[in-house]
Image 1 (cartoon, rainbow, N blue to C red):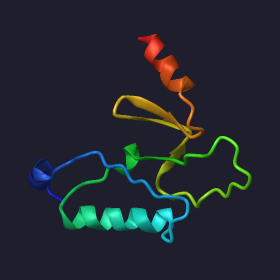
Image 2 (image 1 turned 180 degrees about the vertical axis):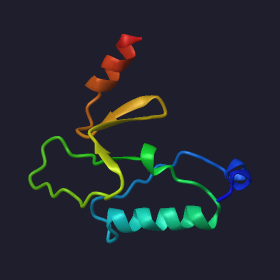
Image 3 (image 1 turned 30 degrees about the horizontal axis):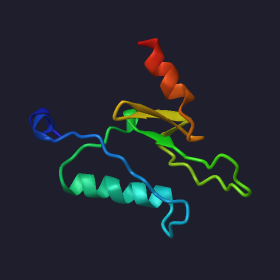
Length: 100
């Protein structure tokens, strides 16, 4: 990609939500999104892409999904100003808000 093309390439944040009972696994779905973005001349910045796996508070049986190899897995992430935790608790968000 040339410098001229990169200046014209739209850049946007994208959120990919895949339910645990999906028949498509997360790496496959992420590859589809990357392919779609490429076809539409959009750029996904892998360096800033994060993966968060939301867990139920008291699961009887929890099977960790396969991680996306090129993406960092985190326990919390900020989305539209709200800090989401993998345990679906808001203590990290409240702590961040009270720091301000």
